[in-house]
Length: 178
Length: 249
Image (cartoon, rainbow over the protein chains, first blue to last red):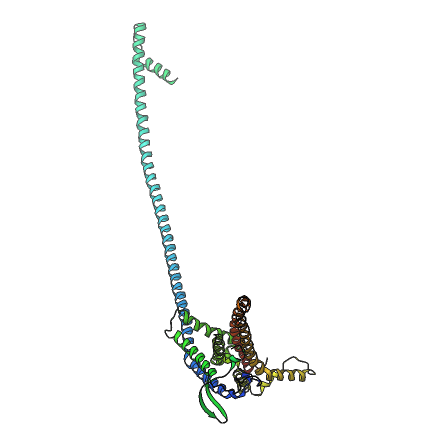
């Protein structure tokens, strides 16, 4: 292998120059460093980095979009839940209202029909009391005539003569009064 | 092969000719630069060719390297620093790949030559200077004048700031160069202990266990150093570029 430094392999005596400080190799190294680094810089700045940057930005954008979409959908579902709850509350309130109305109406109807029935019953009761009073009166009249007859019959058996009709009636009336 | 310096020899593979008095040849260094550059480009373009919404492993790695460098720039130089994203990304990937390839036995490590690291750090330095003056004009000199310093020590501070600014390309390049060079020499020294000791029979074999273990441990350490130095180079580049973008401290 040819080396830049002629005395590298020289036996003894010669001091081997320290390769990093061997100025003869500088031009070659700088020449190739310039080419290699320029190539790398161009490849990175024109190809690799824009591509990786686009991938990363695209992903960040996609995530942001997805999050925004999720937020939007969440908002929609929240609105739907709110609407549903409002509808439910309205329906409850209406049901309550209808139930109250119905109950009041039915209570009023029941009250009215009871009143009617009570009136009818009261009329019937009054009639019944009237007929009871009449029957009693008639019965009482019969009782006095039966008592008079019985008294007449008893007296006649005891004394042999029938008492005066008027006297017997007075005596019966006197007895019934007590 | 026991010479720990031999691995840094530049070997002409294809002599090409001369530019002026300088000889230009396709060397082992150039070969490994080409392998690194070709590998990075092929990896990044191949891994992202299907542009998946849900990345597979390779695409994930490509995206990870992109986001890693992008986050480094954003955190040190702000969003304005992103205009230098291709530059910093190329630097980071180039140094990282070249360092890692260099750890493969018999491979050549491009960054063990100071001329390479100096060229890279000077390209950063010149970018900072040119962009700093183009964007800020003479306000770029505010970089050397920190606010809130008493007037009587200001000249001293400005002197220190100027010197630290001018020494940046040196520390920037020597840090990477020295780390890679020292690591590879250490690895080579310990590895050559193993081959030397095994020449002494059974006891030599037993004695070689220690340097072999050290070589393995050092290889792991050098992996860390390879990645870390690429990151350090990139983050220092970002910090220097931040000075060009926002010189007002």
